[in-house]
Amino acid sequence: MNIRDQDDFQNVWLNHEYAGNKEVDYNHLKVVLIERSFLEKEAEVEDMLSMLEQEKEVPWNAYVMTTESCDRLAQTEGKLDTLLGNYLEELLENTSGIDQKAYPTLGMLYEERANHLETLYIPFVDIEGEQSGAVEDDTEKPQITAYEVWKRGRAAGLVDTDTARAAFFTQNFADDYTLQLAPELYVKVDAASCRVKETEKIGVGGLTEQIVAVTVTGEGEILSGTVSASEKEQLLNTRMEDYLNAIAAHALEKEIDITNSYRNLGADNRTWYFKYQNTPAAYEKDIKIQYLVEINWKSE
Image 1 (cartoon, rainbow, N blue to C red):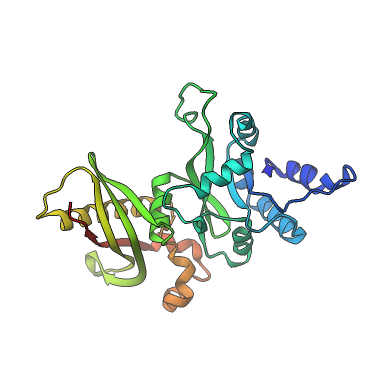
Image 2 (spheres, rainbow, N blue to C red):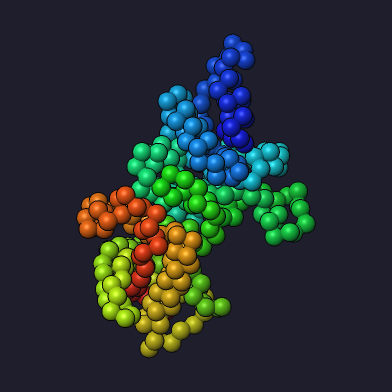
C-alpha cells in the first residue's frame, strides 16, 4: 500500500470499494509505504492511523516503511524478481543479525497513538546512489539507506543506518553486531546482552547528572585487523565503548535516545517517571548515556 498524501489516502483507499463490485482483500498486505512529506504531518498521520485502526481491514503486522517518492520506487518493480511489497518485506527480514521485532508495524504505530512512550525506527527506502548524486543506474534496486525516527507518536527526522543498528543492538534486537573500531579493525559480537539502568551521579561542579547506563556483555571476535593478545580485551572493550558513546551522544544532540529508556520509566525508575510524565520532551535534553562494555574476546 502506497500512501503519498491525505488526498491519495482518502480518494484511493477509502473509496476503492465503491468503484466496482469487487472487494479488496488486504490479508496478504506486506508493507505500508508512506512518503516522508506525509509522514511528517502529525495531524494528517493521526487521522490516517485512526481510520486504518477503526476499519480493521489492513493487517496490524504489516511493516511500515517510508521513502521520498512512492512513484519512484514503484518504477523499479519491473527490475525486481518479485512484487515490490514482497521485495521490501524480504529486505527487512533478511537484514543480517537484526530481529524482525525491531521494525515498526501498523500495530505498533496504533499503540503509540495512545501510549506515547516509544522511540521507533522506520526504514527509509531509496534507490541506492541517488542521494549521493551518483549517475542513475537502471539496475539499482531499492535499499534501506536511513531510518525515520518515530518518537512518541510523531516523526522526528532521519538518522543513519549505524545509529539505528546501535539502537537495535542496545535494545537487544540484534542476534549479532558487526562494527568498525578502527580503519582496518572490524569485530563482531555474538549472543550479546545489553542491560539498561537509570542512575544519578555527581558530575562536574558538584551538579547531579542523570545517567542512562548500558552494560554490554557477550562474546566477541576480530573479523579483520590485528590487536596484540596482551591488550586485546581492554583495548577492544574501550574502543567499543567509545564507538557506542559517540553514537549515543550524537543522537542525543537530536533529542533521540537510542536506548529507548523512556518507555520503561514507569517500571524501572518511578522518580524519573513522575518527573517526566507531563514533560516528555525534556527527557532527552536532561539525560546522558554511558556504555560499559564487558565483552569476552575469543582467542585467535
